[in-house]
Structures are given as structure tokens and as C-alpha cells.
Amino acid sequence: QVELVESGGGLVQPGASLRLSCAASTSIASFGSMGWYRQAPGKQRELVARFFSGDHTYYVDSVDSVKDRVTISRDNAKNTMYLQMDSLKPEDTAVYYCNALMSDKIYWGPGTQVTVSS
Image (cartoon, rainbow, N blue to C red; front, side, top):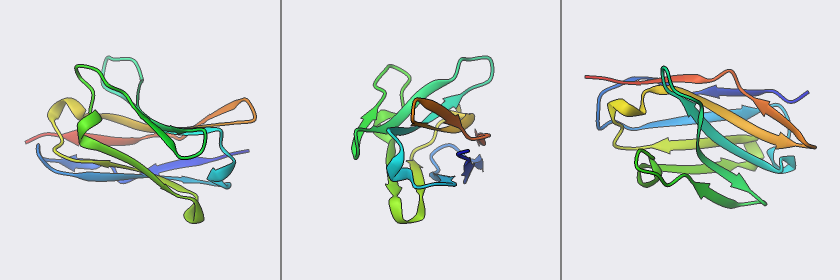
């Protein structure tokens, strides 16, 4: 059983930065892919960014995306993935989830709340 636990969320003002962490209970190098999703109130869960095929990264690019303000990274030695978010906006308010795929199974963490408000 794989466990994922997110941390690093909180209440911040617009323009602030946060770094979210996702700690895995197993080697993240064994994951086929791993990424970050978010779900804002009243909206569907959406992909933010992910790793696939090793160290390749993918950032969602849409009108409301955070593509230019986030960086995904990971530390295999610590079995931890990160999401650096800069210049946060109120519309970034959401629960952020860590997701991983291994052996055709999908795993989710419980999420961490990010609230951007003045």
C-alpha cells in the first residue's frame, strides 16, 4: 500500500509564495508518473503539473493555469515531490493533492489547503 501525504499549505496573502511537499511511503523512483492536482470550491479537480517517464515534466497550459508561476521538483533520496508556487492569486485557492501511478494503480494523498486572501 502506497501512502502519500501533502504538507505546506496555509493562508497567505496575494503575491506570496508557498512550497508544497508530498512525502511518499515508498520509493518515488518506482512511480510511473507523479503529479499535483488541485480542486477549488465548486470546481472539478484539475491537473497542475506532473512528472512522467522519469524526469520529464508537464505543466498544464490554459487561460487559468498557473504554468508560469509554479515549479515541480522532487528529491528521490527523500521520496518527496515538491510544488513551488509563486505570485499566488486568490484564484489559486484550492485543496492541492498529490497523485502517483504505480503498477496500474492510482494513489492520492488527503490534500493540503491553500488559501490566498488579503
